[in-house]
Image (tube, rainbow, N blue to C red; front, side, top):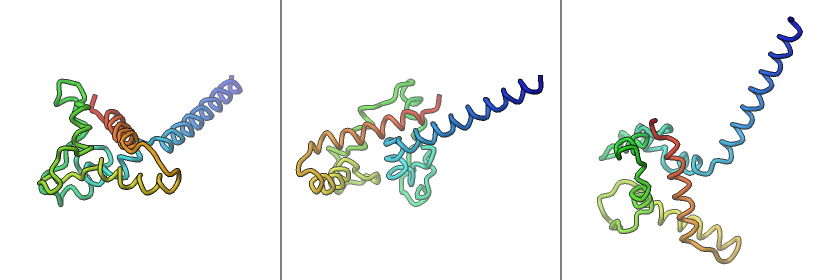
Length: 143
């Protein structure tokens, strides 16, 4: 009986270690989370609650991103989020504190991709980065 119990324990520990390795691998290859951590967490906080390290310095409190769907009858306002992140239609010298990420992405990626390939679809690239970010924010929603 002890032999079976030890074997079951070893299997359980092995599965736990393997699932931990898989989870770590998924986190490494999570472009939406990387985008969020790189550009958003400083204001919105690591968990999206609006408590980032710069939040006290902002004139307007950073949004609690975990409540977006809840405040919209349970539906994530994807179109509005896209517009806010991309920043099109926002005056370049307006009162908006949040950076216009669409323009930033365009500039960052243009230099890198022109050097690497010579040409690329800039709008598709910006759209992809924004959609990956929105997908990650969807995972932060309070359920």
